[in-house]
Length: 579
Image (tube, rainbow, N blue to C red):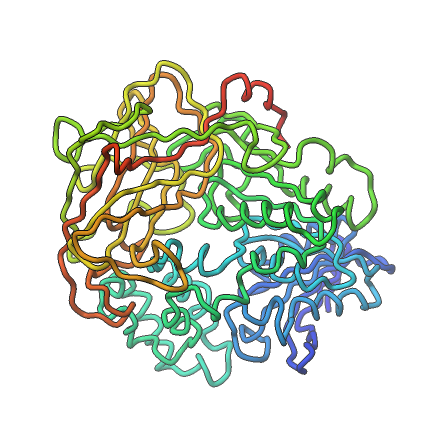
């Protein structure tokens, strides 16, 4: 224990007992002045001093105790790391036990909230349906609510580059020597360091489930690869199954260029509709900004290739202090006033206040794909598709996948012109007036393949007058999952199928003089693993087939994007000051 110059006491190596006797390691920051204080709990798999120190010092200086805890099986916490499967509901409920432990400490008022985001945003969502008696509020920054769908298999495709870099950077490398008998030997250190040096090469290696340098070092990674379907393995991390059990006020803060965006939106919508009580349903709040993933990126105005202007600046720590002040200290500070949904409208670069999500003010219109004068260069139009329109075909060779422009979650709007000669491109006419797209976006493709399985990647871009083709949102669907993510079904080669590709959502003004553009392809590597087109078992194949994939866009097979469009008048009426 040590007292800081600013009147904060820090305790390290605090052991928190779980119901099965496992001890989880924690650090505590609290005001040095005697007394009882509300408590904020953060539960992560990362090194505590690095992760939580800034928040610990900030909130302790504002009259809170901060308990930062390592989840089961990492660093100095006992037990086996269970990939979030013991952090929510089930036989073991580590989140519940930690909240209730904090409520009964001598420095606690018993008013408990939870803190921060990403991994600790997920652990907040997982605690909510267990309803610890002393849990009063959550503030989830950029958290996911479905680890299969948000984190490791969106659209059924594996987030290869992110999963492997996260394994090395967040688990293996930081814990070298910290887990006795697991990562302490010199040979193991050399293996991990070599795996990091050869990460790029490993992404190409087949079979996917073979990575000799780290085999035997972190079993949870191999467990993920062994479960490519959304079945019982993933159920303990799927919040949608238990929305009706949640009875906690939550502020969901997410961002348009965040890989966990979909999970935050589903959590807000689901709890607002199905929460356990009217008070819970009415106390959900949603804030969506133009930012990218990570605490240092929230509230910035320059994101990727764009400057979103002064209104993008947000002091989200001040917003968190107001939220916690209201729910944990009973301060009437107006944080619950105003509309329940605040979204940043990119392009207009102003905030919208909405009564719900998706917005009631939008109308959904199909933006249809149409053939152009050159192969692979088509049109986008709101006009109905022609009775006959020649389809577009392309060759997808897993040996030469379309390279990713984005391989990590912390990149915003990006110019995709470098890869547009590798994909089908559909572009609208120049807009005569602003087009406001606010809400969820789905691509409906009518397609066929020469293979029994392939991927469909769809991206929406904003084409500027200077030619830049900046990404707005995108999505992927592995064809075998077109009907169900739990029960995959292969295609019959040459047969036409309907595919729905989830592009998540956006709030984007396509300005007059700009154009809309859609990419269609079958790879985005190494952001996602390569579909080998054979229909074989995931991760076990060493050979591949070259596929010819075809997109139809005629009256009977109208491939399109379903766009949620808000009128200029509705936008003007919804403009509000920043949160």
